View 1 (cartoon, rainbow, N blue to C red):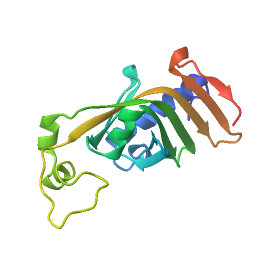
View 2 (cartoon, rainbow, N blue to C red):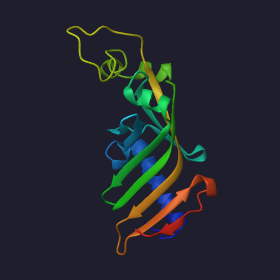
View 3 (cartoon, rainbow, N blue to C red):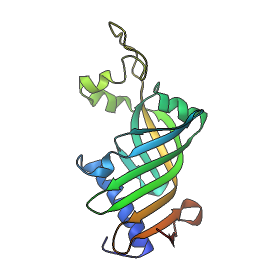
View 4 (cartoon, one colour):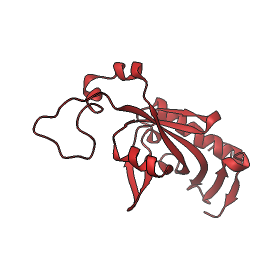
Length: 175
């Protein structure tokens, strides 16, 4: 992190998230998403597809029939986790999610194997002997961030909490 200020740390977080959308080898490309079920939290790794800093949103692709879509319909609260080893940076974020229609043009550009992920059996169900094709269930999962907790494992450790409600001003907190 070149700028040790609160603003600098927040910029660093967003820079890593942006890099995750463009560089398939960057660790921010594969954040862990937590949703809530009636039985408790459920975690999975997703591929970060786009960010919109002005709207505080992160975009992922998903199957509209997936369990995470049902979890979000029942409770839109989510949490995300990203670990960036080289920067020794942990990003934890909270917010809300919603499922939106996928872009048919983008779906058409996906390789056939990738399209099959959205047209086969419903995720999480037992596989039948012969899987029938269904209409595409390609969707966008949009997460609107309301809080970012950033921890750098520098010497000394530094941690800050940023909240949308206070226009992302942030405050240093104990690591």
